[in-house]
Amino acid sequence: MSYAKRQLIFFIIYTAVGAAAAIIALFSGLNADYRTGAVCGIAGGFGFTGIMGIVMSARLLKNPKKAEKVEIAKTEERTELLRLKTHSAVYTAMIFLISAATLIALLTGYRTISIAFAGLLIIQTVLYVIFARYYSKKL
Image 1: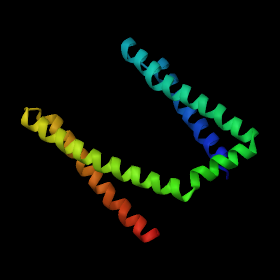
Image 2 (image 1 turned 90 degrees about the vertical axis):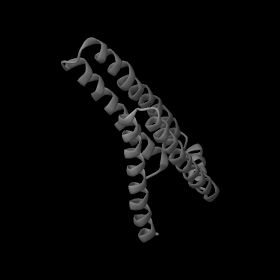
Image 3 (image 1 turned 180 degrees about the vertical axis):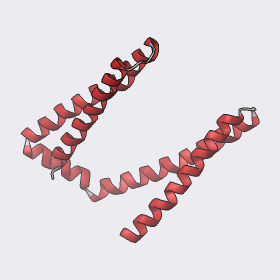
Image 4 (image 1 turned 45 degrees about the horizontal axis):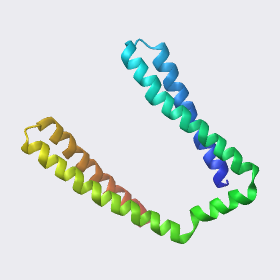
């Protein structure tokens, strides 16, 4: 399946999530303030982004040469290496940032927040180990 078709399917699902959030927010028993926030934030964000993605994907499907260039650019070895290095740098920075936030929250007396941050660190570490083992066996 080509890149443009995968993107189109993704954005259709994305738009459906936005529509489902709008329907749930409008027809559920939520109070007015929460309903407004849910419709504007979740449904509006998912809906708008999904529709724009569908338009972009449809334009790529109509222009096969451009779609091929985009797919080559996405799967090029240099692009893959840059993406991997970027993900690694962001992961490392987030570990340090969340660690610092945990310590700051703990030292300033926000115990619940520090526990939440510590939980995030544990989850990140466990997921890192799981995915590292999975990909070391797969590759």
